[in-house]
Length: 145
Picture 1: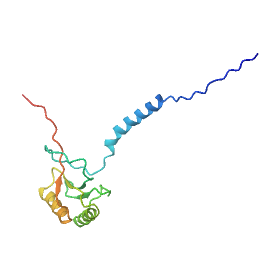
Picture 2: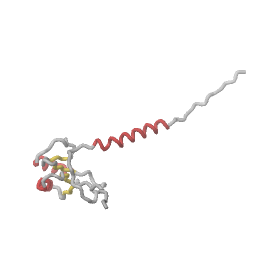
Picture 3: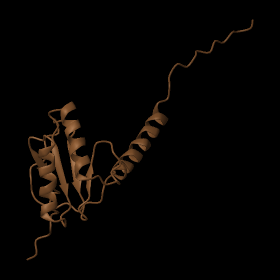
Picture 4: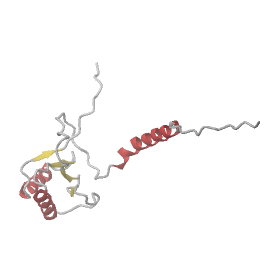
């Protein structure tokens, strides 16, 4: 008599290789994410200040570089400066469509103080009820004894 052997179908999936691939991708994204930040090179002043509430809407950021050029972060090409009139028009348009949008100014630490004040006045002319300033937290310096 011939014996029939039935092989049972294996219905398990080995997920270990998938976990390895996922971890490699996670590491790649963690390393490359900071490199994807685009913008204008601005040397922000360093002061101790409270961070902006993360639950708020995405802020509208007007930037003034060391040469006094204006930039606006509304999906525009941040490498290309805009003039004061265009800045007012675009900010006013954003605030009309999204009234509660926070408005912030990034001013280079080496820019003339008057240039930052001018941008703040332009933003208020565009309808911003309040304008905040973006700074960097100071680096911890070792205490010398």
